[in-house]
Length: 457
Image 1 (cartoon, rainbow, N blue to C red):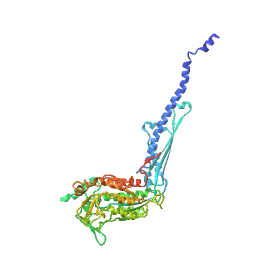
Image 2 (tube, helix red, strand yellow):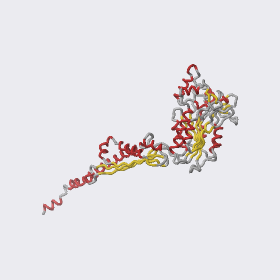
Image 3 (cartoon, rainbow, N blue to C red):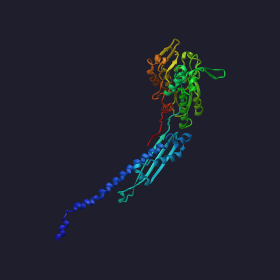
Image 4 (cartoon, rainbow, N blue to C red):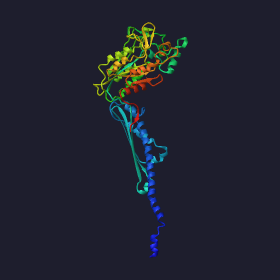
């Protein structure tokens, strides 16, 4: 009995027993932490794959986006769904390739056009086999996630656009830095005067056919396939109108009209010329706009070269717009926007005989930045003004630039245009920038929407 009482009261080995017993939950907890850590890491990898699949399924150039561009009604885009699934399964991390290969993954991809936008939704559920937790009867850990991406342009309002394209002689400059050099080389060949501008000089006959003066720089530019600024503007305007057609949420959301400063110069003043009336028919408006060319003149110094009047163009475009700008909540109450593309230098004979720049000669010709009072008249009618400024390019050795613009108002060309534009609706595009992208970006800003592809969830 004494031995038994001694054995029962001996505690010298209890610590070892307790330690051994406590190791079981500690190891289990550590094992669970490792398994859950692997699961979290795996989910991170799969979320990256889901993001890539959501973006890739509707990126420009993808089969899904091409299908979206062809659609005129909302609906599922099956080819985009197939493409997204392939992208997801192809985004297997190299470090986890062996695990991905054996791990059951359920992937769902939905690509859909809705309200004029394209959206891709990618969701996944994966079941990762456990290692340590398996000892406690938990054979797998399930992880899930989702990603959403949207693409296209998202206009928020019903809008009437009045596109006003400056096609005056200064828009005859070669379009890019490399084209300017090439134009100078072509016009300077054989002892000629090196010139970066194409001067569209000639006359229309009784049948409406234009006959170029054969020795003029415009003929040289066209023969040499030189790309002019007006060519880029017309092409970009056509591309924008095509874009508007593809992104409208409804058939009545956008109407577009286009105007130029005139097919040919007038001796007795200035005008705007309607290229296409306000219409929902983007095909006809786009085709007409693509044909806008450089204004022609009968001869050099025609009307003393006073051929660009912003005062006239803004006043007359205001007359073309009936009523005030609306709220944009319906086709019956549209917003109204003047979408003005110009290089920002007026060259005219002002009616008020005032000049905010430089007088040229004694003919009353003024070279100056835009007079923003004419912009205010439009904005007072709740008509927005969006201005795409095609940078006025300084040319070395050009007498007008050196003597009349550089030190007089060159630093105010852009700022005056920005003052003319409505808030956040001024954008400058330099000679080597992408004109089409700039025009679309300004359009999106003007409609109060957003553009591009983006992850939203």
